[in-house]
Length: 450
Ligand SMILES: Cc1cc2nc3c(=O)[nH]c(=O)nc-3n(C[C@H](O)[C@H](O)[C@H](O)COP(=O)(O)OP(=O)(O)OC[C@H]3O[C@@H](n4cnc5c(N)ncnc54)[C@H](O)[C@@H]3O)c2cc1C
Ligand code: SF4
Ligand code: SF4
Image (cartoon, rainbow, N blue to C red; front, side, top):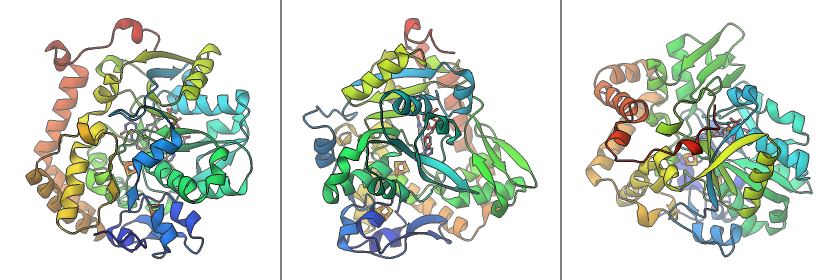
């Protein structure tokens, strides 16, 4: 049974996502870096008010849907107004960005044309530290980072919202918006009108800093000397780039073996394995990568947009009318094709949540709109995963990164090769399309993209 009165279970289980909702609800708390787990978490169990808004304890999707999208139909993909593929026509911006450069186009448009008072988005502070910042002018937008895949403290987003009057656009990953909107709708409704719009990221996972330490160890880089870091840019997949005063390394995220070891899913923060909201159900507009066989030709990246509100669809239409982006409307099927069932419907996450409860471990209480569509993975698979995860986490916490490298090169190698083969057959050779197991997009849906 979860202790819903404090954050103690969250601290003990390491389930914190760093959203900062608890800090807003209980100002005696702050987020601190946990050296053993290499993640962020609150510095104490806090009050009942903090536990009440923590997405690592519970997320009330029905109540949040009713508050954010009153009267809207909720499908197994959440509230969906329109699904689109889109790309910035500014080739350099698109190349620098993670997918199609849509977030930066949207943010500049909100600041230039929609008269918002600012944008709250993750910005680089120093070293490996990124935190939410307030941007007031369109010129500041291009300096924002691309996707940052390691955990950071996000409490400043709510602080900025509380300290500034006006209408703001907030950029956030799903669990960040879960915490933020739970806090606003349960405890601070006066902040709701300050959120003019939310631009969400689709989110598959976030990594602890052991992942960074491990990749640094494999590449001979001093983790403590990191000045800057980027995971994307320079093409649809992009490279991990780490900058220190002594050297700069670029690591292929697709083929580099060291990257595959260090960014193995065992390095994810624990809550990601239980996450049922990769598709960001609470954001007005969600931006992800269009990982479709039909879009594999792109040299710069194409974004998948899940637009959940009519007002957000109007913004995208106005952006297209200004000639800043090219886009085409596709079906909800493309969400599943792009992201896989496990991500969209939580086949593994719901099974893992059940398992954690069954063995008496802390599990967040949440049922997303995808729950009826989930086909739960077998208990044996979940048990094996859990056992292996415990072993690998112990090795991480002892900083035995070489042992993890050896595991991947030996007992885990067949699994890794299978993943590559699957990717090559489905995405590059398109065997499923030729076998008519899936339908490719019509040419007129993709002809406008580069
Ligand atoms: C942790 C994480 C996991 C992701 N997983 C997937 C996935 O599995 N599938 C998929 O299709 N897409 C995923 N994405 C989204 C994808 O990587 C791109 O961010 C998205 O397509 C937007 O690309 P863009 O070119 O429009 O934006 P970009 O120009 O790259 O802008 C990124 C924006 O997001 C903000 N941001 C970056 N990192 C974070 C963060 N950690 N927390 C909060 N805000 C942040 C930045 O401030 C910036 O405004 C993930 C993103 C993140 C951050
Ligand atoms: S998940 Fe968010 S609300 Fe919960 S403990 Fe972590 S920072 Fe606080
Ligand atoms: S996968 Fe889910 S829990 Fe993990 S960072 Fe993304 S939204 Fe948060």
